[in-house]
Amino acid sequence: MRHLIDPLDFTKEEIGKILDLAEDISENTAAYAHKCDGKILATLFFEPSTRTRLSFESAMMRLGGKVLGFSSANSSSAAKGESVGDTIRTVSCYSDIIAMRHNKEGAPLVGSKYASVPVINAGDGGHQHPTQTLTDLLTIKKETGRLNNITVGLCGDLKFGRTVHSLIKSLARYEGIKFVLISPEELRVPDYIIEEVLVKGGHDFREVRTIEEVMPELDILYMTRVQRERFFNEEDYIRLKDSYILTKEKMALGKDSLRVLHPLPRVNEIAKEVDDDERAVYFKQVQNGVYVRMALIMTLLEIE
Amino acid sequence: MLKIDSLEKGIVIDHITAGNGMKLYKLLNLDKLDCCVAVIKNAKSEKYGKKDIIKIDGITCVDLDILGFVDNNVTVCYIENGELIRKERPSLPSKLTNVIKCKNPRCISNAEEDIDHIFYLSDSETHKYRCIYCEQEYTDNH
Ligand SMILES: [Zn+2]
Image (cartoon, rainbow over all chains, first blue to last red):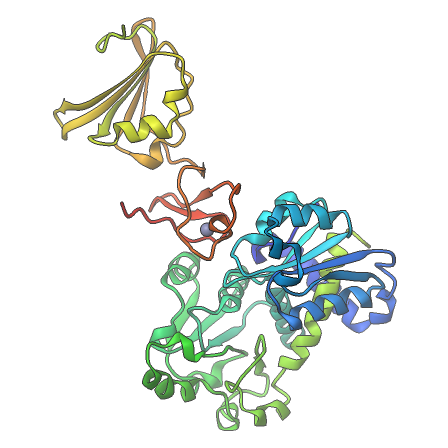
C-alpha cells in the first residue's frame, strides 16, 4: 500500500505514469466514469480549504466513487482532543482512501502510519502540498509537451511559498531545466534549497529582482502571491508589490509559447486583463488538478 | 568492584568531551544495564587537557548508535580476555529516535503527545539532521 505525503515519494517514472494517466483521463473522461464505483474517499480537512477539498471530491465523483468527510477541525473529533492517529484508524474503517489536510506540519505522515488505506497529503501547514505539485507538473507537460529543457521563472514569494519549493525539487529531477528566481530580496528562495537542491544538483539557476528583465526567455512563468504580512513594514510592501504584479505590458515581452501558471487563489498579483491572454493557463491548471487527482486516486487504489 | 584500569571483557568509551559523560550515560540508557558501569569525569587527556571516560564491564553488545551524534571525538574500545580487540570511531547514525526534539512550533510532533521524535541524517558532511515530520533542520543551541 502506498501513500502520497511528500511530492518526492514517487519516483520520476511513477510520476510520469500518473501524468500520462491524467492526460488520458483529460481526453477520455467518460471512459473513467465508473472506475471507482463502490469506492469511498474520505476528505479529512482539519484545516479548511474549500478549493482543494472540492477538487478531491470532484475527482472521486467523476470516477464514480462516493465521498464523506469533514471540512474543519471544529466539526471533527479533533475538537474533542482525539489524536490524528485515532481519527485515521477510525476513518480507515469507513473509506478506501483518505485525503487529509492539517495545519500542523507532518500530520499526514503521522496519519499514514496508522492508516489501513492509502493517505494523500492535501496540504500540511506551510510544509507540503504534493497534489498541487502534480497539478503544476501536469499543466507544464500538457502546455509545453515536455518536462525537460524548459526555462521556468518562479515569481513572488519564493521564501514561504511551499508550492514553489516543491516545484523546484520536482523539476530538478528532469534534464535541462533553467530556473529563474524572481523575488524581492526579502522573499528569496531559502538558502537550503539553493544549496541542497540547485547547487548540489548542478542546476542552471539565477536570481533576479524584476519580471521584465527575464520575460523574453521564459517558457513558464509561475506566479505566486506576495502577502502583506510577510513584510516588516508597510513601506517595503508598497514599494515592492507592483514589481511582482503581472500586467498586459509585461506579458507583451513574453514569447508566444510562454505559459503563465498560478496555484490560486490570486489576489492582485495577476491583473484581470491578463486572463484573456491565451498564454494564461491558471484556470486550465485548476481543471488539471481534478484530472491529476483522479489519476492519483486510481493509482493508489491500484485500479487499472 | 569495577577495576577502572583493567577490564577482562567490556567496552571503554574514551576521549569523551569533558562534561558529556553523564549526558551520554543517560542517552545510551546505561542506567538500565545490570552490569557494572563507571563514568569517569575530568580524566587527564594529553590531547584535550580533560576528558570523560565510560567503562562498561562484562558486556560488549551495547547499542552505541547515537554516540556519533552526541560527540564525534570519542573512541570506542572493545575488550575481550583482557585484550583490546577492536577500536573504532563512531559513525553518524542515519536515524535518531527519541533522542532530540523538533523545535518547530508548527510541527505535529510538538502538537501531540505519543509521537516518536524521529530525525534523519540529511547531510553526512555537515552533520545535518532533519525532523521526518516537518523537515526542519535540528540546531543545537544549549
Ligand atoms: Zn518537526
